[in-house]
Length: 329
Ligand code: PBG
Image 1 (tube, rainbow, N blue to C red):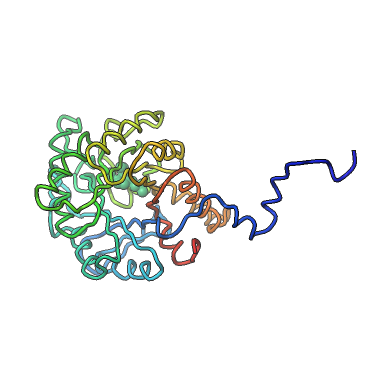
Image 2 (cartoon, rainbow, N blue to C red; image 1 turned 60 degrees about the vertical axis):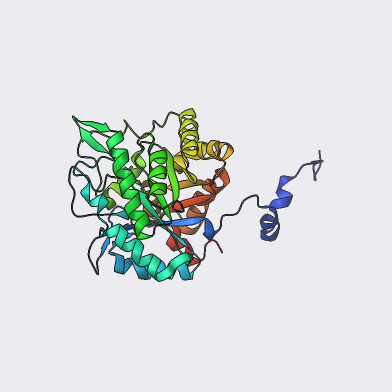
């Protein structure tokens, strides 16, 4: 045989130049789909670097404000807030405090940025309980129904403060329906619900538990978070949350669960959110620090894979940096 070979199909034709590659690219992530996660400290004028999450700090509400302002300026318009309270007890009383760090931050952000910013707030008892579980505990078991009622009240406190979207991450049964009903009864029918629907028990939450000080003091979360071996169970959780009134559904973690993201995208009639969790973030950052990876391309590839798999939106700690560097513009 002689060159050129008689090849009819040459897929490389469409990969020849940057302009051609850009013309035929099948998916494209944009900044408008990203949500930056923030950890909120009580008090004033506080910033603490988080050792397990290079590049991420916890801020008191007043110090969070300029961070969010800078992101907003660059086109990153959504945040997700997590509380890092100092006081913890068996009743998770801090979760219901209208002057807690998260309601304060929500009020401040809404005062300053109004409708320009989407403020989402995590709804869970684990940062506020002394045992660190996501629900109340009786005889070393996590109690479902009383925890759900507390989550409904916590949602009300956050909605009162002005949160646009409430995000229950506890994985108690039936909480979406109960929270929805409660919010409607107290006049918050416009407050949205993003359900952490398919939330798996995962080693990838390690750095977050340091960041939020929410590691359980005994046992683990496997009696309420999902088993990583299951896929159909994720469909069931999503269908239940849709029936109970979820406005958006989430798959979490994201990177080891891309198949679940695709399954949920095929099933869901509401926007699908992927949560690029702390462990996924820190893995990338540590690899970059060690010189094993180039940050820009790795972040683009990681987030791009979630979007390609079917995520309409991504909650990620990379968002601020992506905005700052213009990696998605
Ligand atoms: C609280 C909550 C957790 C995360 C978000 N909300 C921790 C957990 O369930 O243990 C993890 C987020 C991350 O790892 O970035 N229930």
